[in-house]
Image 1 (cartoon, rainbow, N blue to C red):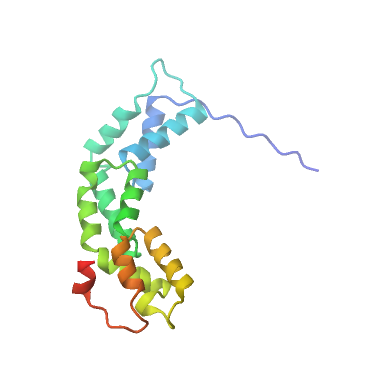
Image 2 (image 1 turned 135 degrees about the vertical axis):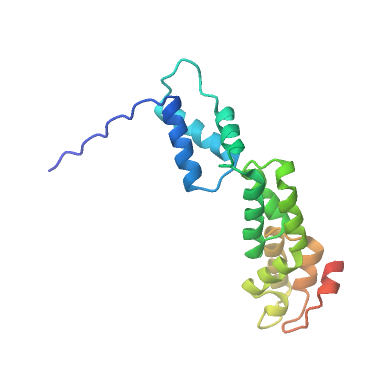
Length: 181
């Protein structure tokens, strides 16, 4: 029977190694300043710190943002386009941006995009899930409630979700009428 070797403990981090980790992270992932700080903080906790003063994670994140390696506004817009393209609504987009640590100023354009595409996103979600006008047969009371709940959890407003779910299967979709809801 072979004996498993214990992995050698990794040496503690210093400023240069922390910068290398940060650069590798932003090179690999689209990220925000907050997510970069969280990642670096986790690495420091895991491996330890071998420098006199504690690391200034905020300064590293700001330096990377100033160089253009991290752009919270571009991340937010990309996330908004991705989520609305998959059929999610504005509330789900806002939740995702809050989780990623995007500040309100950087999230403004993404929020406007999600608002502008809200009807198309809701219809895409309904089509994907075969709800309302995309269903093969009319939903009963319980099916309607389930469909309404799914649309609301996906981040769509109650009025818009109800208007789409209440459309009979195969019905003509009036975008103007949906926009009023």
